[in-house]
Length: 128
Image (cartoon, rainbow, N blue to C red):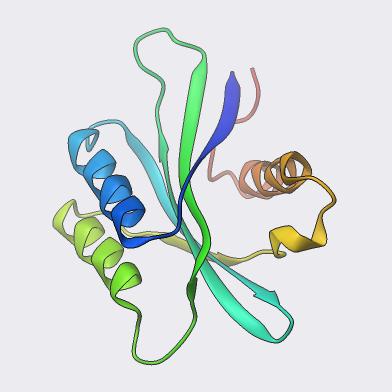
């Protein structure tokens, strides 16, 4: 099974797109994720949804808005919008700390790192 991240942007429109993807594909949602990472003493959130493959397709997409939400008080509107959507769909997100993508030479390596963490913790299925 091919497990691949599909990166959306980090603006409001991208968050709304991710939320709409979740609503439209609510029967396919495997899990939702909120990742936090730190870069130069500042913390950022990434949000993502993993969808089960369609029919017998061998593709497991994980849509992500990467590191665009600063960890501040009060909770940023983009993060609360994601929380509201998940609450509406009765989905509890998995929250975890990961390394910031800037720690990797290539974004592909970063995504391999995150997929490895998700597999090791049984949040996404193993390769078949």
